[in-house]
Image (cartoon, rainbow, N blue to C red; front, side):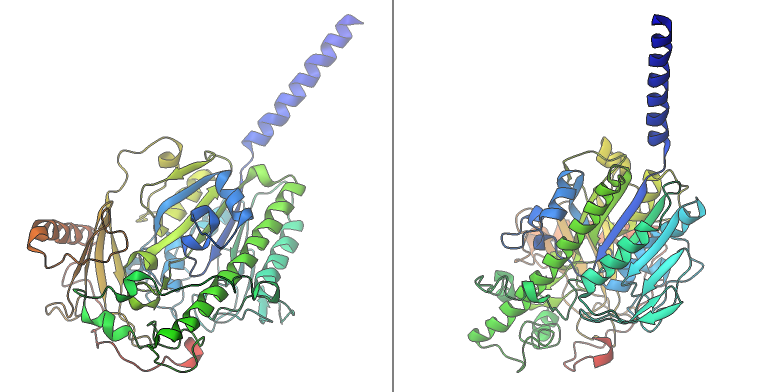
Length: 495
């Protein structure tokens, strides 16, 4: 009897060990959530005093939060392409919001599909303005044309049907996501990508959050009026579609308007922006609750991030595209198997790092010749070889003629920005140089300071070195001709 009991105990221990081994050996799932134009300071885990995001905060506290994450081009489609492929815009070719991601270009969801993952993209794709058909690399693809609408968007459901369910975009796409997750087999890993519209303009909160911030005063930020010593194009932008005295994405009906009381329009715009973020947090709560209830939470890598930053009055601007900090800084949060818990990572990471990092976490082969780097070692231990500088690129758009060509370099402390004319002639605009350690709001342009001439020279050389390493020289780095800041409104179809 004792011998039988001993054998039974051994069998139980063996079975428990085998089950634990099987669980540990199983490939992790991936839940990737991409917001549009999300500022880090619109999340409470990044310090927002007014926008409370408990579900997103919980993901951050259970994993890692990057405090210095940036996009390499602050524009939706180019940045999304960089996130998927690990490449800069000059390599993947998506330089504006109207260009398709080349179908033959490898990306991380497609690589996971090759490795046996079920893959899905649900929500805003936004690479190819008028194309809502399924894209390669995904088993299930649900999207819409253009920007989509906050209410009652028409969806193309995997090329099989078009439908326009009533309701708020954020919750409709979450419904699609949970329905898809319910259909997945426990025997096959999955990678689900959700493209939220929020908080992209035009900002319309759902009714329950429409007045959530009515009591909060929002003035123009100090840098909106600290324009002395800065390039003239910034002043020229003030009364345009992308300036604080302009229409503010239709929150201001009479424009341009620089009267002090017109700040109320700006305040209403920011309130609406914040309100859309509250719904995103509700969505993350629903998704994480489903994963926990279905027993998948601990084996799922969750990445929550924004595609680019957003200017909310800084330097007198709204929108993005520039290389100023609010335009390029993004939130990136990750948790799950292979990642530490409760860590804040201060090193500079880029949108191009997402693809190599996720593939390493999933044990999948890397994409060839990517420009990003995996941060898995960086967040788990340390990485003394991690980047100390990186370059930014943006090309002037005739459809949105409010931002010049931009090439710049950022280090841990310094930022240097230049504005090439586009034809090889001298730069059209004054350069910008900022000491981000002592001037994080970029109030004081040091580009013409004799005291900082040596620093500028070194940063110019570093920018040239980084560009040349990618084959970008004065002759090969092609960009449009800068035709100057213009005041006309963009076509309604592309706003």
